[in-house]
Amino acid sequence: MSAGPDMRLPEVALEHALRFDNRLVRRLPADPETGPRRRQVEGAVWSPVLPTPVAAPRLIAHSAEMAAALGFDEATILSPAFAEVFGGNALMPGLMPYASNYGGHQFGHWAGQLGDGRAITLGEGTDASGQRWELQLKGAGPTPYSRTADGRAVLRSSIREFLCSEAMHHLGIPTTRALSLVATGDAVVRDMFYDGRAAAEPGAIVCRVAPSFIRFGHFELPYARGDVALLRRLVDFTIARDFPHLSGEGESLYADWFAEVCTRTAVMVAGWMRVGFVHGVMNTDNMSILGLTIDYGPYGWVDDFDPDWTPNTTDAQGRRYRFGWQPRIAHWNLGRLAQALSPLFADVAPLQAGLDTYASTYAALDRRNIAAKLGLAEAGDADVGLMQRLHGVLQAGEVDMTLFFRGLADLDTRAPSLDVVADAFYDADKRDALAAEFEAWLQAYVARIEAGGEPAELRRQRMRAVNPRYVPRNYLAQQVIDAATRGDVAPIGELLEVLRRPYDDQPGLERFAARRPEWARTKAGCSMLSCSS
Image 1 (cartoon, rainbow, N blue to C red):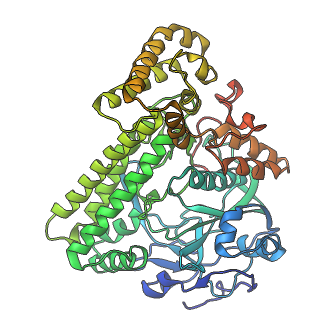
Image 2: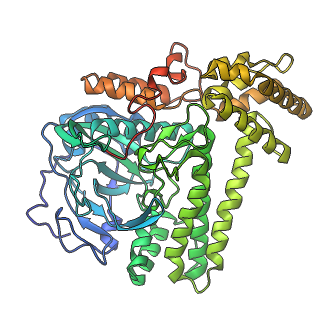
């Protein structure tokens, strides 16, 4: 990488366990220009660019698990030098910062070149166990792909990404991780509601971590430009680095790889549906090739069960990315990836087989989720119907998804009653109006349980293992954001600690499991959010 005047930052040595090899920048073609000047980048996968220094970097939260995995001890994490590096003011030896070049379909339409507009990868390497990690700063300043934006992120969105990345990991759902959250000491101007009332907000930077940040859009861009040589080179690199267990060559290897991408995507989305997570902006540039949940923007958690709900104000009219559509949108996105890969195949049959693998894998996982959420050993067709019937009543009755399924585990089949899920109802009138339907469903459910003949405790264990007690509801995150904006960052760590054990009852912390308060129904940040950072 050639270093120009803009490619200099002081180096700071921090103790860690990573061996930086920076394979992507060493093996894939680079943009010959350095620095953040906005431009179209042809024939290259990455552009050399440094973080832009900030006024007063200060660590306000970190993930102890992620720090340990990377070999940062507590003293290092808490040192001023750590904040300097992960606030973008300095580099550790061995880092080779860059922004990545990719395109994507946004809300169903091809958007052309997009790229890392406010993310800068510091470097990549392996830890002591051989696990590969890429360190990426989000909100670290402008890049060639920032278009008209400033490349920064505000505190509110950074807190949300930090908390949700770690929460999803502990929920058992594939995700990128978060190492640190650094306040910058700079103000960032944002129009939160896109209504012309821009305002200054405190800035922050998240260090997010993953084995790879390669997205569907990385392959779409060279396809759209007719650059088959670069497309093939990128595919070969991705398989060799990120899927080393795959063997073979040529189309057979590519077909196996695409099928695995489809399988991993199905696993991820099935996890979302199980816990009520709504990504909010499932554009193809936000889809990880590793099947990781990536880019926590205007996401949300289903409070009252509603398959038609989207947390994204930009999506409020079309509701393309609504909760219930996520499985089909993932399939559509995989179809766009298949199209991008088509020049590497003589026939589309292997690509169609991969898409079929997604459909069959998701269907099987959905049945497994149905069985587990209801405490059954397996789910037959009648059980799928039982769950669909429940979904209808939950939606009509405005019932909290998380609280209902968690409470259902405590149902006494000898005397079934809605009392075990009383705290899941948002509207008492709707509960009363639908009481007969709920009671009828409970009777059918009890009959199914008794037909299974399994111990009640086994059913309860199954349900508690997949139905979380604690999820990072939007109103909880907003309370933390409000406190941090006032200068109190302690609630970030408090909520993170709760979310580390989402399936456990945590005595004294029941307030973190409460349903959405009425004041939060329409409060900004507690219901729908914009794409504004």
